[in-house]
Image 1: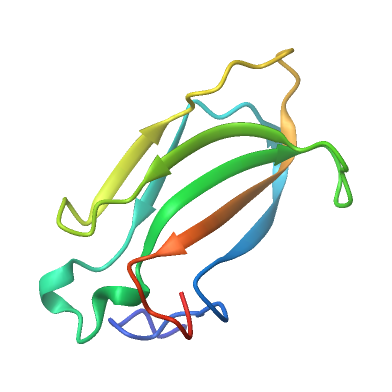
Image 2 (image 1 turned 135 degrees about the horizontal axis):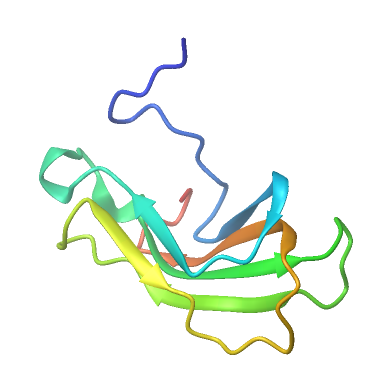
Length: 112
């Protein structure tokens, strides 16, 4: 089974990065949840995601992804934080792919 202990994660090189997920069925999400270890249990909390966006994609190389939400994860807040979709949609077509973009972290220069 995968190691889910604090510090066992998949870091992204640098202060920003993204991950794209292909869903088993298309969705029209209303909110997004980030679950990150609390600051007080981390040896170095500066790599935690801070400024984020979620976009919906119609297909893998979609040249026009749809911005669904932008938000700031508060490292001093609760470990689990939920953010509403805060951008209007042109239509109600579900998305088969969602991409989380971490635009900045809490200051770690090498990884997020």
